[in-house]
Each structure stands twice: as structure tokens, then as C-alpha cells.
Amino acid sequence: MRQSSAKLIAIFICLVLAYGLAFYMAFRTPSAEGEEAVAEPIAQTQQTDEDIVADDGPYDETLTITAGDTLASILNRFGIPKAQAHEAITALSKVFNPKDLKTDQEVYIIYDSQLEGEGYDLKFLRIRADLDHDVELVRSGGGVFQATKYKKELKHEYASIEGSIKISLYADGLKAGASPKMLNDMIKVFSHDVNFQFDIQPGTTFSLFYDTYKDEESGLERPGELLSAKLVIDGKVHEVYRYQPPGGVPSYYTALGEAVRKMLMKTPVDGARLSSGFGNRKHPILGFTKMHKGVDFAAPKGTPIMAAGDGVIERCSPYSSYGNYVCIRHNGNTKTAYAHLSRFAKGMKSGTKVRQGQIIGYVGATGRASGPHLHFEVIQNGKHVNPTKVTQLASNKLSGTTLASFHANKARIESIRREKAKAIDEPQKVEIIKAVDPLSVLLKAQRMAEKQKSASVISKRNGQTSNLTPVYNLLKE
Ligand SMILES: [Zn+2]
Image 1 (cartoon, rainbow, N blue to C red):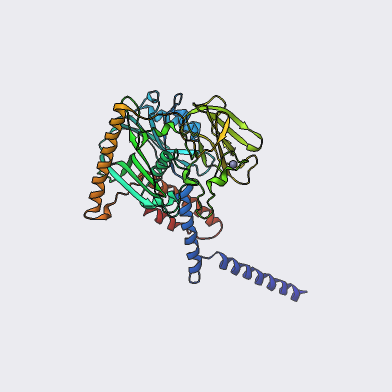
Image 2: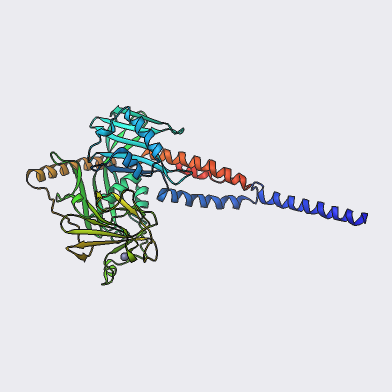
């Protein structure tokens, strides 16, 4: 009896030791033979880094004020919680009366998804109060908003970015030195003319000409306005120029002086997120059999969908096999329809006025859809037409003295651009201006640091070491 209980105790001790050893083996810090284990997570973190560049925050966007917009309604549209929006507006009111916001004025904001919770945090907001003053609102780490109004004393410069597409406009654009905002601006100005799902192909070249504002003290540089942009697809040149007609607001025009804003967008979806695998590109013609009344854009669920032109929402509800469906009435007997949405944007209902480029909903797969995509239709005089063929809503070509002034402005942009190109070509080509929005890079690094913190909490819980440090270093470059 004694002997057998001693045996049991011995077995028990052995088991405890074995488990202990097993735990130790599993959870100790990787050392000598752990080299492989370290190498692998680095590869993973690099992938994470790419993901962050592609769809992770922080996000920045320039929004044009529409009639009826208030600062609160704008922040609400971006998913900023009500209480936080209220704090932001209270802080801003100290230096700028939100009621002074005018239609067509631009608001630049940086926001980021909350680490916990479904909404977004407002990180930064800038309003051009007038020509000489900017109003900026910054949210500090502690969540306190601080507003500043200052006279612009930044050094005005120009930045020229050129490249050709090997993988995607977005990836190759970032590689060429453009910021996400610049690329989104470019996609927006060309989405009237180019179907970013079908038309872009390897070998497409792009160039962007920007003005930038440099704070010489800190060396920080902010992208200003896109002055001109060019896409050459299969030898066909697409060009736009920024121009402010007398008494009007700045807008983009084709080389011939046609306002792009008055055209229907051919890519009414965040072009940066389109799935553009060149290998399985669908031929546009195949998209228009008798049964298919529109064109499909494959994009991840949740990708923002924009109104293709100014108009009024006629229908915004589920609609049989179309799933969640939006129909917009534009002038000139033209309607556009958007199907399979995962959800509608806030405030969308029949009768709502929308501006071109305004987000009306998000990509999904509701109704009869095999996967997430936007099904887009154009209806003219009651008939479905090929969306890639129709772009003109109403003729809005500049004429007379305005057209002459447009051409003079275009020539001026071209000459500054040539000067700039000459200056870059001459002594050292190293000084190609890399106009990445520094604030957004900074915020990205900050966010990574926060992520790293929370990740290390999780990994501590799992008894493993954190391998997230390399990501932070990559982002700092
Ligand atoms: Zn379809």
C-alpha cells in the first residue's frame, strides 16, 4: 500500500516536471533555433505593412461643402461619435465660426478607426478660412482638441511626380512618391474619363503636378492642390488642369476646357481599392451582353461608392435581386443606379440632394451577387446605356474670354512644370520632391505604436514574444 502510493507520487512528480518542461519549451523566448521563428514573423509583418498602406488608417480626405452641410453633419458622415464631434466644434469655434462655412469650400480631414469600437476618431481638420489663413484642429494623444488660426507663411513649392504602372495605380503611385491623398485626387479627376477597373493596364504612365507648402523650420511639407494630371493609357492621353473661372470656384477641366465636374464619373467607387489583377481583366465588351445592363466593379466590402454626378436620390431601398439599391436622377434625363450595397451612407433617402463624389453607400453583395461588387447602371431617357460610353451630362465647355483665360492658365502651369523638370534633371536627381503628407505618416507611426502596445498585451497573455517592432521601424523610414 505504502509502496504503491509512493509510486503514484513519483508518477505525479514526473508528470508535473514533464508539463513544466513542455510549457517552458513552448513559451520561452526563441533563441538559437528560434532564428527561423523570428524570420517568419518578419515576413508576416511586412505583409501587414502593405495592408496598412492599402486599406488601413489613418485616412485623409478633402470634402467639398454642399448646400445644407454643417460641420456636425460632415463629422457625422465620417463616423465621428457625436460627443467627440461636439468637442471638436467647440474647440474650433474659438478661432472660426462654423457658420462661416460656405458651399464649395473645402475641408481636409484626417481620421482613423477607433482601436476599440466601430466608429472613427477625428485626428486633424483643416479649413481654408480665407486665402491667407488656415484654421487647423488637432486632436492630441489625450483626446483634447486644439484649434489654431494662422497666417500662412509656408514656402510655396511645386512637386512633380511621374511613374508607370506595373502593379496598380495605387501601389506604383505610392512608390513614385505620391501621398494617398494625391492619388485619390488623381483618381477622382480621371474617374469621369477612365474606368479604373478595365482601362488601366501595365505600361500606363501617370504624372501629377502639385503645389506644396513647406514649413522651412520643421521641413514639413503639405500637399496643396493638384494643378495638373496626365494619364497615358495605350497611347491615349488623358489630361486635366485646375482652373478658377472669373467669379467661379476652382475646378478641373480637360485640355479642351470642358469641366470634368459636369461629366458623369465612369468609376463611381474608390478607385484605389478596385481589384485590378491584370491577369484576369474582364473585357469591357463582355460586360455588356443583353442580360447585363451595367458594369461591375469588384472591390472589397465596405469600399465607398460615390454619386457619379450631382443629382437627387430617387430611390434608396432594397430592390429584389439588386439588393440594397440607390437610384439618382441627374439633369439631362439621365439616371444612375448602384446595386448590391452592403449599406447606405447616413442621410440617404429619396429626395436627398447629392453632389458628385459624395459617398452614398458602400460595396457589398446583397441581392443576387456572387461576391462583393458594385453593379453600376446608366439610364438615359428610360433606356439602359453603356456606362463607359456616356460621360457628358450637359455641355459645359468654357468659351470666349473664359476659354482664353483657361488656356493662358494651362500654359502657365505647363511652363512652371517644365522649369521644375529642368531643375530636377540638372545637378542631382536625388532631390525629387517626395510630397508625402508628413502628418499622415506621423499618425500612422503613432497608430502602429498603439497597436504594438495592445498587441504586446495580447502576446504576453499568450506567453509569446512580440514581433511587431520591425513594422514600426519600417514605417519610420
Ligand atoms: Zn452587374
